[in-house]
Amino acid sequence: MSLNSVYLRGNLTRDPEKRFLPSGTAVVNFGLAVNRRYRSGDEWKEETCFVDIVVFGKQGEWSEEQLGKGSPVLVEGRLAFNSWETKEGERRSKHEVVAYNVHFIKPRDASMGGQTGSQATSFSEDTYDSSTIKDDDIPF
Image (cartoon, rainbow, N blue to C red; front, side, top):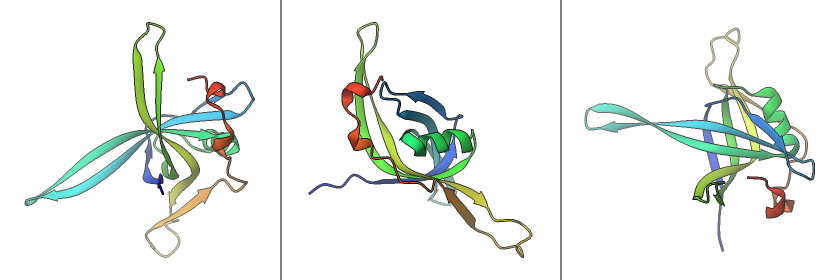
């Protein structure tokens, strides 16, 4: 039995970029910065993890239309490992998150009695099943 599930909350580091597979399926990529605050002795420290996110289909198109650099989001997905060869013949590889759901996080309206917290807005149609994509379809 195996488990590959990722949940990340952070902010986009760049505007989403959309491309299309030869099949016509949209592929959207964006970077996500996830902050971690922790205590070391008497001092608070913060570290940031930068993660590449890939979103397929209508969920990706929604992300590209609705999100921009700095947008706070919650990403649900799976970890994927990609390797490729550059035009110069060098081998490259990286881990990235293939997102199933992307939820936009926005602060509650200040007129709501000063409540704190957040509200999430997400794409409401069926989630795209990226398992139907063959390796030959992916141009990167």
